[in-house]
Amino acid sequence: MAVIELKDVSKLYGFGDATTLALDEVSLTIEEGEFVAIMGPSGCGKSTLMNMIGLLDRPTHGNFSLGGRKVSRLKPNRAAKIRRDTIGFIFQSFNLLPRLNALENVALPLTYRTNMSQTKRLKMASSILERVGMQEREYFMPGQLSGGQVQSVAIARALVNNPKLIIADEPTGNLDSQGSRLVMELLSEIHKMGNTILFVTHNPELTRYATRVIYMHDGQIIQDEKTAIGQVAATARSGMYNVATMTEEDDLAGVSVMMKTKPHKETKIPRKRKPTTKKRSPTTKQNSAKRAKK
Image 1: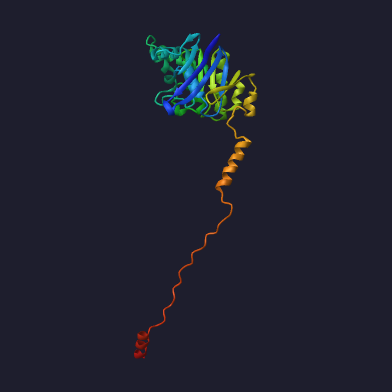
Image 2: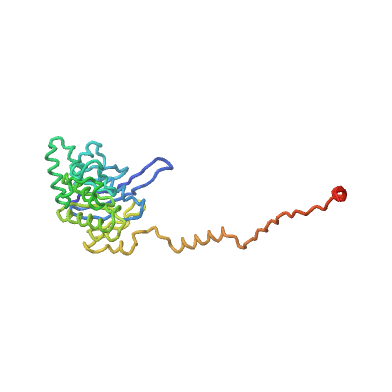
């Protein structure tokens, strides 16, 4: 079953001459249970695509279905309810509230369920923290945790509503290699439980965890590659997904411009001579005065 279906989706920002085309007629289908990595240079439309899929934004043109339901033109309140019940978000900057401990941060999304008591919310949050290996630190404040542990708490918060789809926008962007591995292993375990996961990354090594890699450039999907778990995607390994590389023609054009701006001959600037002061010879009156003294 298709969880996500985009057909000729475009997103425009601005008006008139200031219009920016963030997505250019993107068509994409993602099946239930896939682990999809999205790659591409900065400004290629990755985050816009994720915001669209996460119902944080609406397409300017095209159709979007989530779980078989058309959601392109939903009213904000209806979109918020579907987002709350079916989608979990993981952000690069964690977005935990610093004055709440790990348990309270994870329980926060459950506060929108008015029919659930606080005791039940905290119990569910504790259960999810145990699932991600953070139950022993559930009373720690975010400032007392490492980067990897903070992101693990953020993952637990994304899972607390039991979403069908998890969207992670560069979840390892602010982590070191050890923290990145912890987070990706955790997402891999969640994927094995049947969740559909989409994550944005610039790191080719992280494609080892994906079953599919999508490459974007200038608001379009330029390649869609099936991959084997445990292996780096071939296109990501070769670096060919970064299509904004300089060609030989670009290099020659750059040299040509430099040759035009550089003078052919070096011209020496003549040095200015310092003005010389001549000693004045004594006047006749001064000589007469000296003789009178003698």
